[in-house]
Length: 439
Image 1 (cartoon, rainbow, N blue to C red):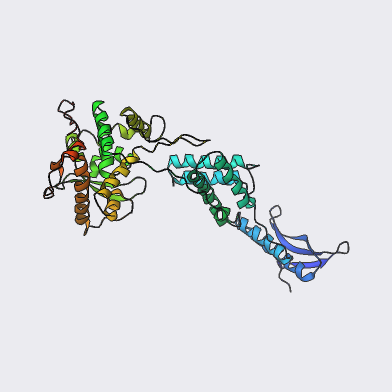
Image 2: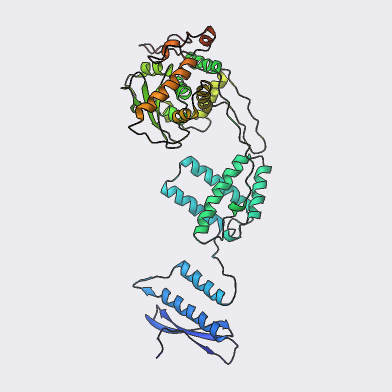
């Protein structure tokens, strides 16, 4: 006796094809009923194989309780099995670009995997590619490397830099990678694309005279918090967001002879422990009144970008102080680029350390270019090494001879030329005023 759910095939006198007969679940009748469907096959063996797939799919579609166990993958697998029987290339399910890309971005937003600024950038990248496509819902599985080459060329022709174009394509590649994993695309077309040559501009380091000139301007205009941020930048090599959002609780004031700034960098998550040397050390000791949680309480409230953000305000202080870099003019839809910004202080710190023959390993340790974990066994050694490097380079370059650590003053007396390059900061008086300036 045949199984009640076994598919059967038979011929019909009105046509050349074998017909399949199999059971399906009827929701209306709440029972299994017979279903007849043409196999479109003239060979009995092929027709039976197709009929078996029909029956398997029908059983999977039947509800288990109140829900069916059938999935989208089951349907696609069954269809492709039938196509393979017929010697036809299997198909992939198609989904529109815009719908899929927006769902991808929403998943990032919901999971809070990226910062709001990055979300905004991703949205811009998605919008550019959507606008480029002839149809916003262009099928994902028909996006080819040839299409992406045209998009790449259009971006470059509009005046965008190679680095910007690569960044946009990287975002698209992340979306395509997920689509491949979910079976919507056969492969990631970004992997076949030759990336644009990066024409990324380099930041300029400040000269010691320019740092002194900037401190003079900030002192004359009573910009105490910007003095703090600037000294943090040049004496520790940290980024704008870390300097302006520095907390007093991050600074270990129990260490001697240096206070130590224990920081987890916002951008990379790298932990750094930086001894605070002169002229920054004396400046912070004057500010240490316990009246605020932040070293720069007003600046930490401001956004980084925008016309009134931290970056724009710092550049405005540079211009007012008469410090300007060789600005690269805007071309096409690109934007003008200033080689001297707050990030230049990071380059300045690194350059001073390098010119003082501080090893690359120690420079990376201080600036956080390479991640590392603080280990209790070697912590004191790392702090001592960093302190010596900073004091004997930053301290010598920016401060008076007396700013060096105890036991490190056996060098020859600072020359008159070095004194001319020395940077001092006017200290807040008890009334909040400012005292002497350049040493």
